[in-house]
Image (cartoon, rainbow, N blue to C red):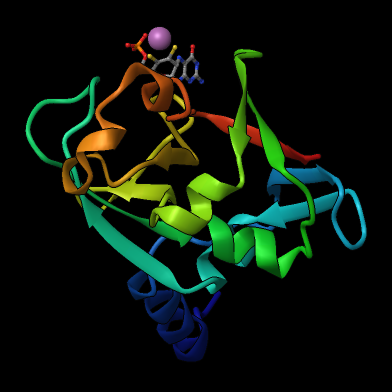
Length: 157
Ligand SMILES: Nc1nc2c(c(=O)[nH]1)N[C@H]1C(S)=C(S)[C@@H](COP(=O)(O)O)O[C@H]1N2
Ligand SMILES: [Mo]
């Protein structure tokens, strides 16, 4: 059987485009949003403006560079209205975060660290990251607990 040159070329182009952005939902937003529940895929989250942030963390060495969407952009996109979100992680860890955090600081839903996708095995696919090194008030246990990794859902209330 003869392999089509066209399909080989298409395959090479797809390979060069990098890993496929899966259409599996990875983050759910519930509660006080325009049309709950909102299921977001990696593609949806990557379509938001991407923001880069270098910061030390309490769980990594050095100063990794994180990239992802601004939490306020995500919440605006889904029409969130309320006082806080309850962030829930894969391991059932949950914590309430006041929405003012996302207005006052450029908090991101990080999807890459040092250019590598955050995998669900290690803090991914989404890790809430605060610009800790830029604001001394963020270097506090109250904020450390809001750095939820393996984020699964946000409930707006
Ligand atoms: N998914 C998830 N995120 C989490 C936690 C957790 O248990 N699961 N612990 C939180 C707490 S209590 C703190 S202080 C910071 C740092 O956690 P660690 O110092 O226990 O590693 O991450 C936060 N994010
Ligand atoms: Mo903690």
